[in-house]
Length: 96
Image (tube, rainbow, N blue to C red):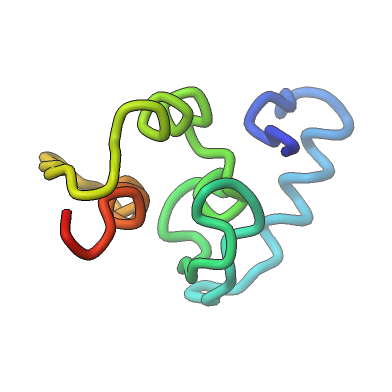
């Protein structure tokens, strides 16, 4: 998995990537490219590009994958655009 979040926005590659990523019109609905939510729908520009790239707070995602299991109950207090709501809903399944 490519962690786009680790690419500095000050270098040539980072600046170029951000310009390319900002060409999407708002509100374009696309599929998340990688990670545990790969294939789920996301609204571009509802937050940072890391959401739909699948690399948003990657270390926290790994932590969630390790500890949240099917059937668990998770409270998402202070949800912003729903990334973790969608993520944990997938992890806990229909009985969670």
